[in-house]
Structure formats: C-alpha cells, structure tokens
Image (cartoon, rainbow, N blue to C red):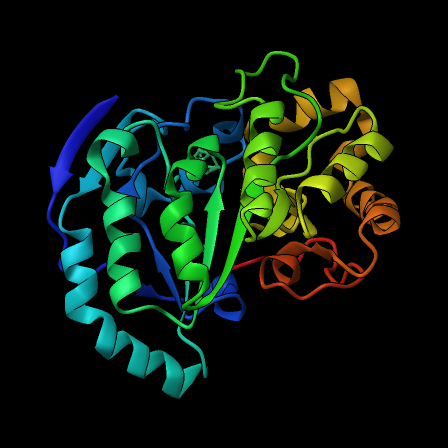
Length: 295
Ligand code: SF4
C-alpha cells in the first residue's frame, strides 16, 4: 500500500450523475481504498474510474487528504448556500469512492476531523457509507451529529457468505459488520444495511431476519444497473460474475435482486429499497429497468 499525504483545495464535491437524487454533495476523506484488494474491491465500481486510479492498481494506493477538515470549514457556507438553492437540502454522502473508516483512520483521524468540523457547521443531512466495523469508534461524535442533522448510517453487507470461490476474503467478516450495525442502532442511530452489490445469499430468510434485527432498512443493488455501466459490463470484465455463478447461477441475473427484495419485505415491511432509490432512502418495489446505466 503506497500511502501519501496530499493537500486539497476542495472537499465537498457537488453531486453529478446517479448521486444527484441521493445527496447534494459527496465527500471523500481519502483517495484510493485499502480495501481494494479484498472481496468488495473485486466488484468496486471505483476501480474503473481512471481519474481516481491514474492507472494505479486498485487497492495499492491511499492518498490522505490531510487538510480535509480545514477545507470543509472554509467552504461549507458557500456549498450549503448552493445546495439549498439548487436541491433544497445540503446533504453529504460520506463516502462514494473510498472507505471513510479504513484501518489508517485510527491513526490519521481524517474522517474524525471532518465529523468534528460538521458538529460546528452541520449539513442538513449526512449519509455515512461504510464497509468497516471501525465506524463504531466514531459513535460519540455520530450520536452528537444525529441531534444536529438527519444522519443515516449505511453498513455494506453484500451476503451472508464471507467467501466466494477464487476471490479474496472480505476486509471485515459478515459477523463483524452486523455487530457494528447493531451497535449503531442500539446507540439510537438510523441504520440501513446496503446489500450492494448483491452476492449469492446462502440462507435468505435467516439473512434478512438478521438484517431486520440490526437495522431499520435494507437496500439491494445488483451489479447490473448498479456498477455505472449498461448491463453491468464493467463488472462482467472482472472475476465477480463467474464466482457468483459458481455458487448460485441465478444470482448473476437482475431478477435475483427482485426476488431477494420481495423476500426482504417479509422481514422489513415498507423498509426495502433497491438501486439508487434505496440509497436515497426511498423505499418501495424495484423501479430499475435492466440495463439502466447509473451515470
Ligand atoms: S470499501 Fe468501498 S471503496 Fe473501498 S474497495 Fe470496498 S467497495 Fe470500493
């Protein structure tokens, strides 16, 4: 892992493409992701973003935005004014192209600094998106933030399986991520499990019962329609579809997502979302057409 420290001039990125209906801004404390060589990194859509990777293999670099909190404080008034004028709400998605709580965060505290800056000047809404059980280290500040803005914590758990044949292990076990989600929920935060991209689930009834215990809602997204390319062609170039098909052939079809969403409704009635609608907190039946591109 090549780690470098960078100074940035902006930190609140105005939303474009599919994120526009979810939030007014995205915020990346880091560029690159230390989880890139783990299971979630195989199907991670960011690995195809040449502007971020600059031809570096995904999972091999981490740029630390050391002045992130300072730049937040400098630019938040301007961006909040812009967001309220354009979208009506200043809502931040943290993060869409990196992990906000990588192992390095414990030492570097970039995300922690940003959350503390948000306590001073809070957004209207904040969506935390994480694969990492380390999110619980931020519980004290998250609990305070939840009193000052609409806070939603998304914890990614793509399946009840820790391994798929031929693919690397996850950065954190399914059990550890469920435990983290449950800790957030018990602390009074709104928690959503993001099953994205949906991987083959060994015991769907047991899985969604566990989701209902650990969270208030669930989002299901398939790599078809979910990876930013028509028909999931970006993911089709990776090892993920073959590994999925090896354990559950039906799982590589979009209909698998819809079948899982119907089943999830039994456990979380009215709290199941799909595709970008779910990430935006809009619950309801699948609305995405096969092959719909995200951006
Ligand atoms: S944690 Fe998120 S950004 Fe990092 S590799 Fe996994 S899916 Fe991609």
